[in-house]
Amino acid sequence: MGYFVFEKQSKLLDESQFLLELKNQSQSAYGKLLDDYQKKVFNTCLSFVPNIEDAEDIAQEVFVEVYNSVGKFKGNSKLSTWIYRIAVNKSLEFIRKKNTKKRFGFMQSISGNTLPVDKSSYFTEFNHPGIQLEDKERNEILFKAINQLPEGQKVVFTLHKIDGLSYKEVGEITDKSISSIESLLFRARKNLKEVLINFYKKEGW
Amino acid sequence: MIDRKKTSKIIDELLDSPLVIEEVNTPPFFKDKVLNKLSQNTEERTATDWLNWFTPKYQIAAMVLFVMLNFIALYSYSASNNEVELQNYAQTYGLSNTSQDSILN
Image (cartoon, rainbow over all chains, first blue to last red; front, side, top):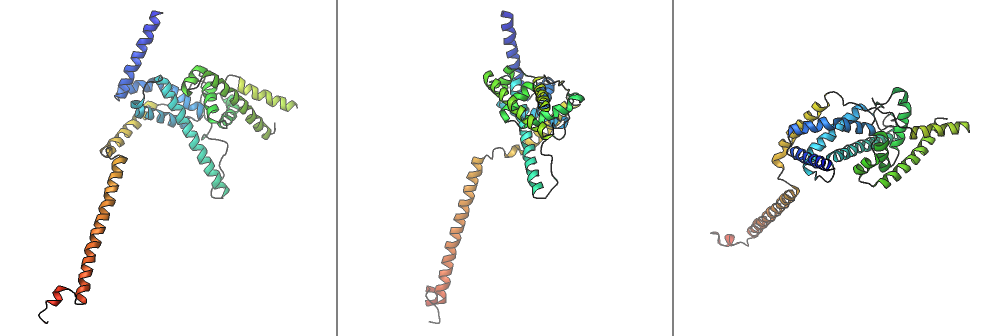
């Protein structure tokens, strides 16, 4: 028991020391941060935006934001949780921008200025290297359905179902209780079912 | 009916089954690209650093000062102009002292 307390305390000390180095903009500390978190951040971005190029751009922006805002980080949460939050916010920002552009493009297509755009997709092209080819089609449909969910449900569903985080981790990132995570997941599943039924109906199933 | 059942089954499978998504490695040179972006960012920052003190508070103060100076300049210009115009008028109609003190009188 004592060993675990000591280990926890030394971990906290390590993290606060590491944070101090980051705040002092130490290049070596930042290099370590990149080594430790690049894979996690990239995979989270990929869970929200299933396109390798888009996700790479977003992940890069996440690390630039971390670098610029680490001075403002007060340490109220774990560093990893804070970085996850930035990754989620940057991904949502990207999706919002894409959706706005899509709407604008759609309006232009109505007024006859440009060619019609693809109204169903918020990513450039479905290109998720972690998804097997045989699952690609059904997962693409799922990702498009997730995009139609309200933002709160979208975040919780993506972090839990796609990114594979536990309820506790999702709760920490979104700053919500486990019961509200469960409720959001329940509603997300219900809404997704409706969206998918409509989709398959349109497809003539 | 069968189709509906089939569709419902497909949807349930899609939502309930754990998604088989493998963890993906970051693209090559990801770290280098980020570090490169950061160095560009800091260069841009240092370029604009000399104007950092010029916060909105100072910007408003500078604007108010500029507007006040303009008003003062305009006011003093119109006041001196009025004086000149009045002198001209008086001279034209022989009302000024200078015209009364003329040798011709």
